[in-house]
Length: 299
Image 1 (cartoon, rainbow, N blue to C red):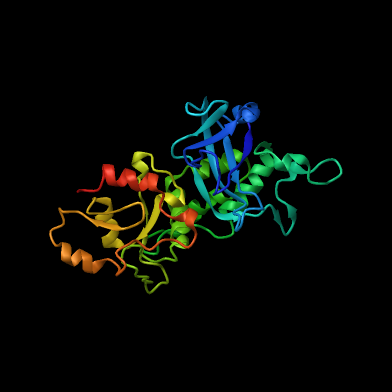
Image 2 (cartoon, rainbow, N blue to C red; image 1 turned 45 degrees about the vertical axis):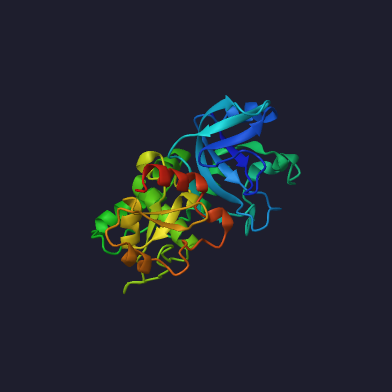
């Protein structure tokens, strides 16, 4: 088993869903199989406008032939393993190339950089994950959570990574994943509630809005920004209980079980649609919205 790089474009022609599956041709079968049971990092090429570079990590569960396309295969992603990076990592940083394994004996970038699937050394994996998780900005708890100095020190200790397994254990923590998910979702929505349109900041400078999973973690909902939406307290409560929902084009649905629908209509923003993130790839994905309508929304 080894680490790997999977190239993925937001405008990909392949049947990819990064948190669930990665489609690839047979020429990469051996390389992908070498990653089964281990972690890969997703990379978006530099030629893509507003490229995210190295933008997420996930664990490959198994590989199967694509049942719908001859000659193609699917790398199935382990449920709950996908995680967007707090900060996408550029192909080249201030200190030069991030993925040193791409350099040839002359110190030049080799042809391996064009491969859609390629192996990744443990040292390169560690470097990219450290940059993506942004160790310089500690993921502190909510300001209304009481912590002693000792407890804060204990929570921050995992940032002292020594080996790859330390990083893997760290990102497996639900507390850590929730904090990372909150940061990426709130950043996508500019800390504004998508339902009400309000951006409320409390006296301590903290946004009074939550990062809600559209498909919950308990139902194998992944920690990908397109499965998230920024919601204020009341909107979050109503969304989780199926009293409001969203169409694929983000029209706000109000359940017939709401006891005061007029007040709810006054509560939502004037457009009648959830306010979307600026970048289309961060919008709620129809796949997750459909799940919420089918499994949660009360007609």
